Length: 404
Image 1 (cartoon, rainbow, N blue to C red):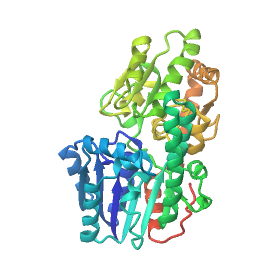
Image 2: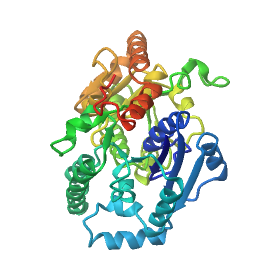
Image 3: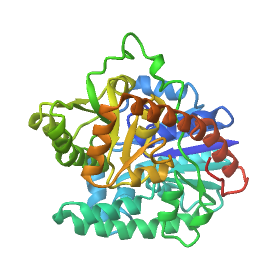
Image 4: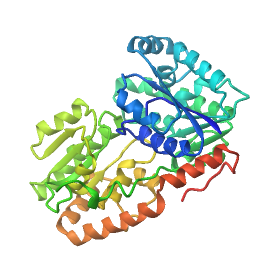
């Protein structure tokens, strides 16, 4: 099959969740089909990154979106019904490039990731196409409208309404749809949401393996007690670490003053960087060449996610690295680990503090939780299985593919 894949970002390097999902699924699909990878990018891309993608994709085109064009699109979006994040990525010069690709490549099927890219093919009614919603963006925006700064809430509410309308429209226009978790599927507002296939992410348990780290990175002596990782410019991650440092950590340090926290991840927001300046036991590392070294350097992984949607890859990676994990019910709803057995769940700050203190004081409990979590991700999350489900969906197999 000649498969055209449309992404809002070039899926390499792997520093963001949408890139991770796209990279692993596309790489596996490219072993079965002739893939034309069409990527938008609001940043300049490195030649070596493009070369890496060409090593398994037969065709690659990256369309650059200059900042001045994006600014004009945002102004025009005020007078449009399109969601702002769809307008951000939809440009005439990119649409012309897409039209040329379709005419020359003549794909048998189109796969779009996120509704951000669906505008490019929405009017190609005769062309078979699949939309990977990935997350329910409308619900994530709705939560930001409830918790965000007061002066931004009217914008978030307006964007929520636009996203709900647009997600519903795309569900009608695309032949097949996929989403990352049953929780996200159930948050869609379309009455036909049950037809959307749940295709979870996987985790490379061979790569995220504490015993496979270079040098002494896997040493037993861990310099940090707690760890949080992620794209640190992403609002749900910013919200999570602010909650952790400002509301949970003081309760922990009241009983264990020297408790340390490492916050690792690309592009930390100024509010995140400021956390290290206000607490000497908090370290903000920024981008890390090998994120496994961050996992290996701490005793407990804590992700108190309060907003956002989708599946938290950070939790899968931490469990694969045999780290005991403490998270929110919101995050675990997508993961599906058994509370108290494979993961610990917090609700209020005191819940998180109690879990952390208990684990720090009981190494045997840390080991039990870590081992159970490791077994859970190995049995439940696999990129090969996810790619197989997506392939079956696109090639006409039953659309509703059960999650593992």
